[in-house]
Length: 302
Ligand code: TA6
Image (cartoon, rainbow, N blue to C red):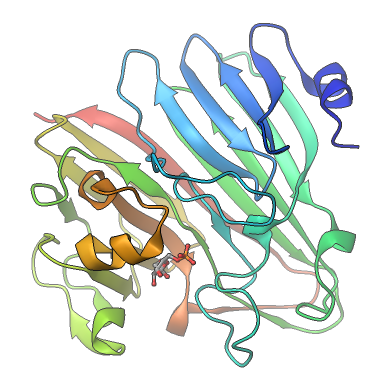
C-alpha cells in the first residue's frame, strides 16, 4: 500500500504534496504551499520540518539524525503512544511506546479553502504489537499545515474495558541558543524532576536553562511561550486534551552519549511536549475518543 507510485497517484497534488523515498527506504511527504513547507515521515507520522514561508524553521531536526526503518528519528515531533517514557511494568518494552517507529498509512491529503494543507494518517490496528498492547484501539494523526501548525492525535478505545493511556507529542523546537531562551506559561505548576529521581517541585517564575533539564509539569493547561531573543521570535504553543507538559534538554554530556544529537545540537533545541504523563495518565472509557490537540505559531518578539 505504501508504494511511492501508489501514494503519489492517490494522494499527491502536483507542486503541493509529493511523496519522496529516502535512500534507506523511508517515505516522506513533502508539502510546499504559499503558506509553509513541511515534511512528514510515514514512519511514526513524524513531522520533521515545518517552516512558514519567509521564516526560519520552527521545528528542530538533528544534523546527525539517522533515518532508519524501526529507529526513532532524532528531532521533529515524535509521537509517544500508548505510553510515555518507560512502560509502567515492562522494562523490555520500547521507551515512549511503539507508534513512533512503525509505518503509518495515509487517510487523506487535501488543500483547504483558506490555503492550509490537511494531511491525516493512521496507525493500522494490525500493525500494533499485540503482546505489548492487546487492546482494540485506533490511532489517527491529523495535521493542518499553514502559517500555523495544528496537530490532532485521536485515540479511540473500541474495546469493552477502560484503558490507561499516556502519550506525548515530543516536539523539538529550533531555538537560537538554549542558554538565552525562556519558557513562560508554566509558572506555579508542580513538576517531577527526572534529573533528581522524580523529585517534586513547583516552578517559580519562567523556565531558564543552564544544565540538563528533564521535567514533567503537571496540571499545565495554559499557553506556553518559547521566548527567543537570538531568533527574535516567540513560539506560542496552545493545546487541549493534554494536562501535562514535558520540558527537556539533554545538555552536553548526555547528548554526546546519544550519538544522534550532533556535537552542539543541544544548543539549538528545546523539547516542549504536550503530554498526558505520570499523574496525568488518562483512563479511557470503553468507546471513548480522546483528542490531544496542539497549535504552534511564531510571533515576532516585541
Ligand atoms: O521527554 C523527555 C525524555 O523522556 C527524556 O527522559 C529523554 O530521554 C528523551 O525523552 C528522549 O528519549 P528517546 O527515547 O527519544 O531517546
